[in-house]
Image: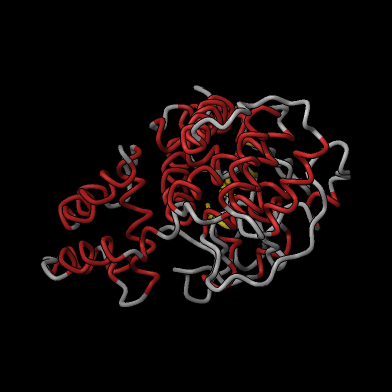
Length: 372
């Protein structure tokens, strides 16, 4: 049975800004990065709070920018300006990312667009100061079509970001091996190899999500070796049990796969799981990762509609077998979503046949959503 950290301790994969968002990256962000007027965008006063909350993509872009992951941040800001053409701050962040990546021509085009179409904004003020200090850069001066200039700049950015941030063919580098903390066996080479091969064989669309969201996969002797304190926490699905008995879980952009579990009473270490069983656990936990990285698939209206329709036609015998995935709570939705994604990825144990027969509409939705 799958185990998962309690909902109150889980955090969605999508990065969000840890502190109050500032609309202009040239205030606190660029100051922290050591930017000066001669080398980049000029400092500007913090703008007034926006009338509406910033979108998830914008917040993700800011978080990636603060982490100095400028190629990835550019991808998010490019999506924001396509969907929110009046968001001057997103244009400014995007232009600044280009400057930091060495693409001064596109940076200049974007800043010129901001100055022309968003006058009297903090973004225009900072962009104008940058342009004044870097007037020797010729990025299409001469009164050309500013809309076409913007389109060209965005296309160049998209091509560059797609090339830089796309997941490589092999992403087994996401897998990290945890060494034993006490006198117990380390993870076997067979288990590590099986997990890496399974990751590399995942569909490109899945690998892309894992790569872009910086998900990491930890293969550990026991859960205690990964995080000693967690073994005393109650595990979801194990009434009264703890993570000593947990073979795998997902938390905070981390998938943890244990080769062994521990006895709840005396902490003795049990026999190792077969590598195939560990791979099945990986598929299920990857389902949780994809759920949260993609803004909570299991909580979307489309998923809930399909899930409720399927749940209304469950055969009594199947209902007993699949009761864990039919809980009348968010837990049921989340576990069903993860298990079905695991099925799509190649899971072959547990309740594969029953799940496919019971949730055809939900499975169809997930297949389309994940492009599997």
